[in-house]
Amino acid sequence: MTEKEKLVDQAQALVVQKHQLTSAQAQLGQLDSALSTLNAGQQGNQELLDKLIAQAEASLNAQEIIFEFEEHEAFLVESSVFILPEEEASTSIELLSSIDSIEISDTTDWSGYLDGIDHYVARNNILLNEDPFRELLTPTQRIALEKRIKEEFSLKGANCDKYDYMIAGTCGLIGGMIDVFFVGLPGQGKLTQFSDDMTDNAVQKFAKFCGWKGPKEGSDSVASAIGFLERNFKVNYDHQHGTAVGKRFDMSTKNHHLKNLGHSPDLVGLFFSIWDQFNSTANFVAIFDDVDGLGNKIGEYTKIITVDTETFELKGSNMIAKIFSGFVNWLGHLFSDVAGSSGAQGRGSGIPIPFFSLLQFASVGSFGMDKKSFATIAVDVFQKGYDLRHGMAMAIPVLITELLTRITWVIKQRFYHKQLWSDCMPSANNPELRRMLLIAHGSLCLVDTTDAALRSGGDIVQFMLRSNMIAWARFGTLALKELRAWYKEGSLDVESVDAFLDAEYKRILAA
Image (tube, rainbow, N blue to C red):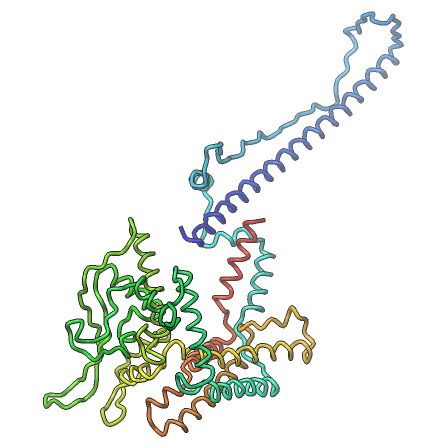
């Protein structure tokens, strides 16, 4: 049962309880009315009795009848004395019906209670609509809620002033300068060297966590840690050459981490890694030349090649344990490859940036004398060091730009617009902040692209090597958000409304 279904069941239970409460209140109203009727009748009888006694005394006085008797002595009124009431009292009280209820015992569970609710609904002809929570609100509460949602969750356009644009552009320029002077080409920039060192340290720490005792005397510690991980997290899809899998295609030690989909540190890589480990197969992305009838190259196309491997047995006595074992193998093997292989000379070939391997399916365009497609260009770029370590270095100026923009926005809201600190939370849902982030990352991408174009000399591979893909990915997501907000300006932000309503529903149910 999903979370939403649980909320709906709880809401329907509250609707039934509200119906029971309303019925009980109605019965209490009828009971109060009956008691009032009885009270009025009792008062009338008392008044009638008082009147009868007065009439009797008047009759006795008129007949000059005097009673003299001792205490406890009986007496008799003559039968000739008659006292008649002026009117005869009559009282009619409507019988009260019993209140319907749901039987609950010590053994009743939630499922049994829901069954009782269903029977109660059928007996009392209660109509449960698609939104039972609506029945829990009074008309006044619904109007107030709809007004609040319209005011707070309507998509609004940005209302930035000139200072907002100046601040955003400056933040983007700072991030761009950091990217140009400290990132540079893979393996050469100071930030890339920093990320390489951090990756080496992370690999050694992970190896120690897995039982590595440290390097032997005189050996390289990073290579020793990588070798330990390679021995302990073996997989069946770790081929290094296209000829080794029985089907010839262009693959080498420099690009096999990109060609094999199981080496991608994302959901795609996790899926193919588990799949290959369970089925004793290996899946590779191969790019082939597309030729015409005369043998002339007219383009390229991409296909996935699946080959059988030696039988690979996963540890675990059941399916869940085997899946977990496959996940651990995938993660451990990624750590063994993220800093290059144990026998690599120099920096070595790492693993791709998340989802970078999917660029191999973009077999479009024709670049250079060899008419290479964009997919082949992406492979060439990876082979020259554009891997996850370089991706982490590229993320640093993007992160700096993001933080600078958000911090300066908070400062401006607090000290220029005199807002309360509670109203200065840098949420991306704020239209002005969203626009500022777009301008800032756009400025970063402009500086990055200009530098890459000037230094590449028209070489597409050099241009991509100097381009910050992380910055462009962030700018792209912000541009889509801004475009969506512009297109839907004035309409409701459905996702934010759903999140707000879910929180309100849970609060109502907890009350």
